[in-house]
Amino acid sequence: MHDFALIAGILAIAAAAGLLATKLRQPMIVAFIGVGVLVGPTGTGWVIADSTIDLLARMGIAILLFLVGLRLDMHLIRATGPVALVAGLGQVLFTATTGYALAVGFDMHVTDALYVALALTFSSTIIIVKLLSDTRELEQTHGRIAVGLLIVQDIVVVIVMIAINAFGQRTDATVTVSIVLVIAKGLGLLTGIAVMMKFVLPWLLHQVARSQELLVLFGVAYAVSVSAVTETLGFSSEVGAFLAGVSLATTPYRDALGARLVSLRDFLLLFFFLDLGAGLKFADVAGHIPEAVVFSVFVLVGKPLIVMVIMAAMRYPVRIGFATGLPLAQISEFSLILAALGLSLGHITDATVSLITVIGLVTIGGSTYLILHSHQIYHRFERWLRVLEWTGGLRVEPADTHRDVYAILYGLGRFGAHVADQFSAAGHQVLAVDFDPHRLATNDREGVETVFGSAEDLHFLESLPLKRAEFVVSTIPLIDVNLSLLHGLRHHGYDGHVVVTAHNPHDAAQLRAAGAEFILEPFSIAAEAALDMFTRLPRDGKRVGEDDDQQPNSSPR
Image 1: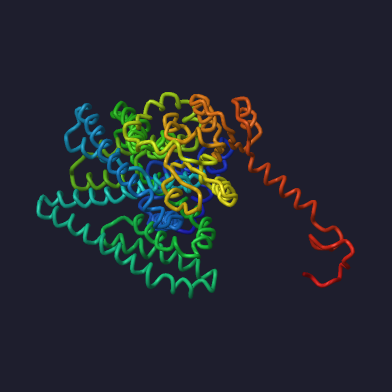
Image 2: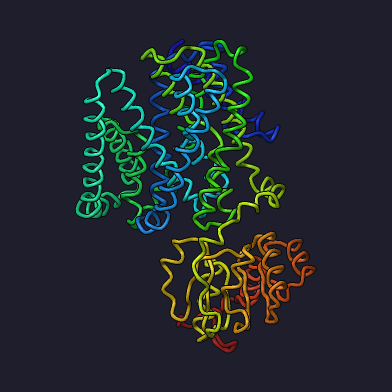
């Protein structure tokens, strides 16, 4: 089939599958991977190492990671970097160790067990970022930590693949030289990006931005070019695209670029999922069903738990650890590439590659549902997950509980920041509590102190000056969080005013029943303010504020 007709046929099938998935309320990603299996060697055989689809897929990946980097800035990376690094490396270590032990338990050969363990370790940056973007969680604390963790994983997998290639040559000196070269190239790449950010990009963007069409073209060209450079240096193209986005994140043009590239990203990513599905191999699957089940369950349950435990040890709330770890409940497309590399070097057999493929299909499909229904899953298992809140021994010593504060404010997000500004403008002392390091680090409001903590942590309340505060205000709109806070305040005998936030009347009714004194409903408040403004609009051509006796044709003030 001619390339144009082939692409047209695949797009038609993908559109039909997407429509069916929408009707059945199923994730699009699973539908598109299924289409890839259908048109791949396992199905019709239309797509067999097709360079056109592979090229479009790689373009989509570059645009996706470029947009992710575009939404981050250096302040944010400094705030989430430590937890991403520790959680990322810790998850790699514990997952690989446990996976290897399970593989040996199934009497696998040592080399096969090692490859399976490594394959279980890595998660798909592309799929996770796409799902978090669809659920609008990419900008939240757990979304930013998850992205950082995935970048750490990508760097580790590059080093692992270089080491495997070097070991394939059976020369210890080659391994050492290769790793040293990777480090040197990485430092050179970061230095080059930093120089571009400082001296080249600000001037260049100012010239390019005079034309919106040229700005979009520059964004795509820059993302793909940096991806190509990093791939040439031996790193993954994903790392390059991400760094390209980060280098533009502090410029005033990032929002314009991001808004215009979203549609292109979604279209091109279709080909990534098609290519992924077409590349799956299912030879000798029947003989490995028990292993596939056990390993899939470990990935779907064990990997998120590992991340949760590590983040709990770093004093992050269980809710954040759960939301960060759950998207990692899958294996990566890099796992399939790693398996193919091992097969080409003669390290593993087709049977091991098929096992890894089945685990990939099951976990990618399963984790998609987990991410889309994460809130319901957390609510159902919350009381068991609370066991992981064992951070008391690591907590910083309580602050001065006798200091004078007018209000204790939970949450410095968009709504909470405005509330803090109003308190500050009125001359009141406020103690703001948040678990987002970036918000705490960037707070510069006069009269507003900040402290790292969670509204769901009952023990944390002991370190707060509850007896001196007239108000405890929660601007967090999550019903479970506010109910936990109300329970904790009652437990500690707080007798001041309690104000909580709700986004809908049903949650507001529950909070009132639980003893909340005042309920803030931001959307209702905004609607009432808007209606009040509308009712004061002129009806006969007069401006707001004009006197009734002023003539309509008088000059404007």
